[in-house]
View 1 (cartoon, rainbow, N blue to C red):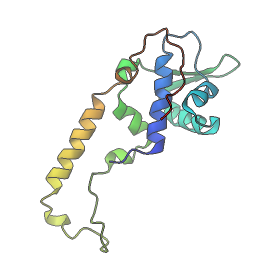
View 2 (cartoon, one colour):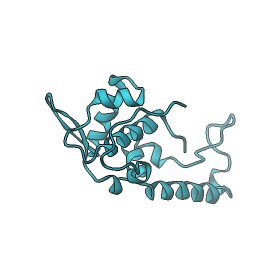
View 3 (cartoon, rainbow, N blue to C red):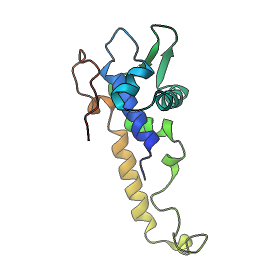
Length: 150
């Protein structure tokens, strides 16, 4: 499993919405882009994917923006990653031999498959147990704060 930029930044966008869950106003693409240091076009693309997966709801107009469809405590990281890259969730840790062959020469009798499948299940199980609320324990009244510099 490899975390893609789409998955990471999509999750960060949702964390911004989770911080504003008790706000009377939806969060705009511009606000998210500013606080995450991303372009508005990229945030727009991410929000489109998240809306298509029914994780966020958009409101149009001057007072428009995005809100979470679920409570932060009900939205898991696994759901977010699946929404942003559905194919990545079905890939195993080890798909095939990376040498010069087209397919793994051990495919029919791979003794390591059990290890790779177990690792994949462990990772996915962990992600199903982590919610947005776990990542954003800030008080409901907290305003959007700039992303920390790394």
